[in-house]
Image (tube, rainbow, N blue to C red):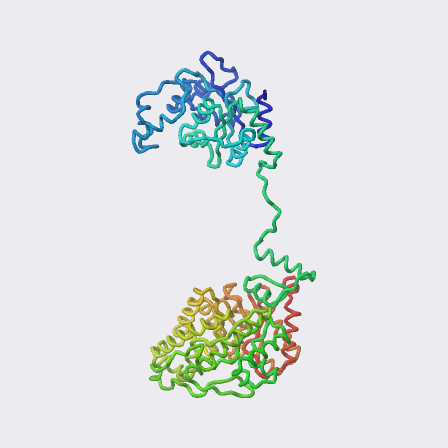
Length: 614
């Protein structure tokens, strides 16, 4: 027969409980109490209860003897037979209003508690199992659910089947002691409220009680199931590849790229900027439209009116310079043209509007909403977006549409529109309502092609209007557009020409995910502001910055001048991430291809994060 020290050693090996397993023996009348046993009334000068002394034994390592004279809990006294049940107990009064709704229900609950006959036993004796000087009737182990599971498995090692236990959430001393002794079967124990309040059993703890006669069998079951591969602590499956936070994985990818195991795509660099992280270098692209066409020998008009030639030219441009962003972009006149304006083409400059359909304000009521799939050049631009997405260059892809303020200005006439801000502000709001609604419809058609969306607003510049004009006539509609597309999980980019730093906070407040800006165009050099540097200070990571190498340098410049402007931008913004190096505006259609190469080469060289962060 197993002894208590061996039993404790086996439990510590296979179960590892946080507190001592407790040996429990019920002493019959006349059976001597060990001299070393503490007595609550005598030694603590306090009465105690069954669950309390069991918990004291498992936590303090004490041997304690509890008699009728030491006991305070009427429920426990009745359960272990230290006194007879009184009528108040039998009729369910002790349960009513606390554990049950009625006396009748309480009576059934009291009757369900297993009890010893009054006088059958005289003393409850408890001690840590390895220090017990007596043969226990029951061993009780407090443990977490996984440990109780292991004990349950051990109990079924030889016999199989299921282990039956029942729960009342009350009178746990009866479950631990009486039920286990009367059935001769192990019990899974759900500690009751009293055990948690007075025994201070914790929320994570359960218990398991074992008849001493079954202890050797349980130990054998622990060994057998352990050898079978069922262990505590529970064996964890570890042979998997973890999915780590994206920024952790980016570092691994950078290492792999350094070693030539993988190559970073142009799009990877842009994605890193949007995540406020870093790739191998700053992402870079010039804002290109008709320049791509002139590289292919197309006229500006051909590029802007022939979608098939335009996409071929753009892909040829991409292959030549490998920008990190490639655009579906032809000109900023097509939206106004769709409302009825006439477009003027040139061999050297971007298309413009001649003849404004709203020079007579009364014409506003007669404006028809253009259909993106049927009106003027809009279907061709959708075709261009679809073709770019289908070509799938390994770069970020975006489409440049025109924003509501610039469409309104082109429809009305910029000079007259500025006068309207003073003379007829309501007309401006009425016109902005029309153009903003169109931008939603137009943007929806573009977004359906799965390309990124940008609204260019060159005429929203503070070089042309005041900050107050922006706040009154433009910002509410920009914010409305942003929120409309945000609901569709589409982030918007905006580009505004000229001086914009006085409204940086307003633009960011509209919610644009990306802001592209020009150079400060104040006439007085003493008032000049580096808008890129200022934007990084104002934005503080709330929006990605795109900018702002001087686009006018691309027709005529020295290599040194281009490199200096690239360095200025990278020094101002790259260390913060959330930055894409680009041009201050669309580069001229007749830009020098060699200068574009200087721009890209210097960006690749000076924009290495190893240098920037090193």
